[in-house]
View 1: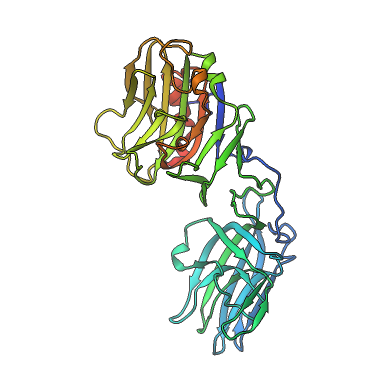
View 2 (view 1 turned 135 degrees about the horizontal axis):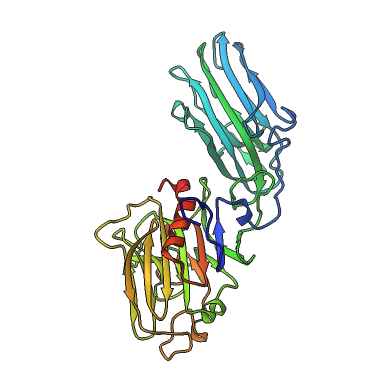
Length: 425
């Protein structure tokens, strides 16, 4: 079977894997969506479209369907006559019922947008309340003409909700938490927006997880797809493109709770592989993207843009890095693979191609030269994003695999071919 025909990740010897593109990676039961009819499968039930002004609006909402059958709501909001300010909105009320953090997520795309000079922005808004639509600290996402033609765009709003608000004039308002799409002021005939929305969700909690309809997670955890281990996510920032971002904090990483020395002690060969991008420089000059806690063991991101891999014993270090002067720019994806054979060599592959090989001395987990993370003296877990107190990364890691054997060059290429289309590689 050749890499040109097989587009799947190699599974033989796979001991640890996660992929944020795959909903099976997300651990936990579905959370409660505070919106009624969030996917518009029951038409427009639960959604209220209103307009206020002395002018005339041509405001419509219609449920339509993607080619795969996924429903979405199309809204066309247009001013047709009259003078003075006017607005229209789509909303659901009384969603935020207690003090705490709430997350709004979903997707939208803009088909048409036009506003006259002086018109207010159209926007998604969270946590409005009765009698005072300009509540303080309300989170918004403005919609503009630049969004036209961008396809489906992820939406995420985080709001710390309180139950009452005292206005500067002394008036105390009881809050009635809303989620709404708001056209803003439309003072001129012809002001319009035509927009689609789908998969909308409002949930209680501070951790926004990627939206997969019906399968969202309410836990700060991923699932190890290879062996069903729990992967602990520590203080990571979730991005709307479905990635977690590491920010060099020593508490900011992904850790396997079971894949420790028991795997590494049992084999003399293994492979690390991940899809990564560096977002900023590291305070130590480099950080461990995927590997073992302590002493730079694994795939490394360096400040000079060079990807390297390293293994360190009590007495000596072996390292390989990208050959030549090719550097990886910030915010550029790369597929990196490190293979280890303790009796032969260590290899580094970038985007499916072997960049360098280094020969190593014969070492095993029981030798006098203790390998960090291998012997009982260093029973460390597999980690992504750095260690516990040193060599952390500023990076995004979208997916990762660990094997208990050395992958061949053909298998490394197969893994790269399987994922390259998702990252434009």
